[in-house]
Image 1 (spheres, each protein chain N blue to C red):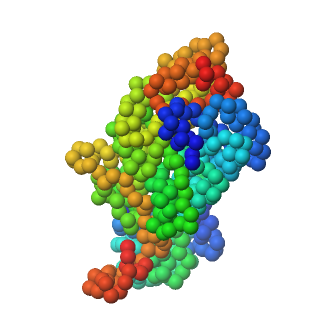
Image 2: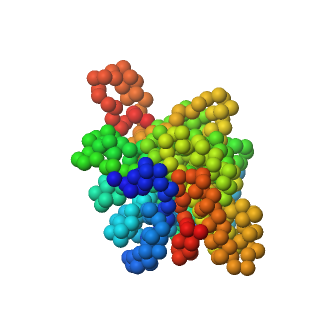
Length: 286
Length: 235
């Protein structure tokens, strides 16, 4: 059974991190990240061609980090595969021992390194979550019986700071109805909005893992605001990083404060170190 | 209507050169291409002038009534028989459907003079937007008359995606998110919405589409004995 689910069931505050599979076949860089993060994290997300850029598959990389001794959260986007391929990969994932899945839409191909690619989007993330639940019940999306069911712990993304909130709330309700049991949020800067999201989700029986982004330099602020979908660094935080003598240290201090706040609000925290993997221990224990 | 745009001139002359054509007949269309300002009288005159300036002989031109109508186009071609007979090739300023009816109606090399873009809404004169993909599996009844398949760049039935910010689209950042618009219109009309929409049936959009309304009448008269309708007549 998913350790992530067991920890939630036991009332633990869960810590997750994130690794990116390599653009190539050399796994050593990813493993170095895993070794830095694993002592502090209960599970690690493995991204799926993040930013619509080519990487080794999340499926293979998820298994690789499982072999390295940490539980993966296998991410699936709807951008690159149709319903046959997505279901096929879900069956493969379960057979490879991957128990957590996170269903996301995926960035538009025009934002990535293959801008001429056809965005598939045969399914959306809510439909895909619903299909994973159906597979947990032993059937494919057409209702046909599977020889061996899956048993995924199903997650999805959530965007507590992206207004309008009523639209977000209705998406959350749809995702939970589809079978989503845990959410990982986009990076949080406004704790009141996180509280609003948690208050809405908890009564529906799902868990919230709040995202923390380590903004290690003014350049990262610009990158986030211009290139990361569904996220803006608020002015007061951007200023704090810009004015700092040592922006990286300031970013670590900021992330540490955010983690402390999140411990009082959400069910877990998801750290996105953006290259400062070595600081994750300090951020989580500070 | 079908929205078209002028085709790259070098590709047009390249097509004409491929068959050594120096004498050209022009065919326009009195419907969509006229409204789109790409294949009406004015555009045919301008194209004829450009061809003449480059040394081609334009044997004649006509704006077909409905160029995608096969029998109508045959009739138009008959009216201009001599001009067409004396041409080496025909250049069609209409959508791809019109190019193909013309090619079928006229036994000569026929070339496209336009690029066909999409089924468009005329927002105002000269401004066209794609709002329908003719997918054969309409969800407008559930989405307050706003098509997410077409107007969401990702074509998501259930949205918004994670890229939406302040109600705006991730991909087309100057446009409001389709799913935010749908939600607002549903709310304004006091409608709850249909909840999560099921995965789309893409089999209805398989190419090539084909409809014969006589099949439809037959299918309606004997719905059960015939079993599920075949590809023909299902759109």
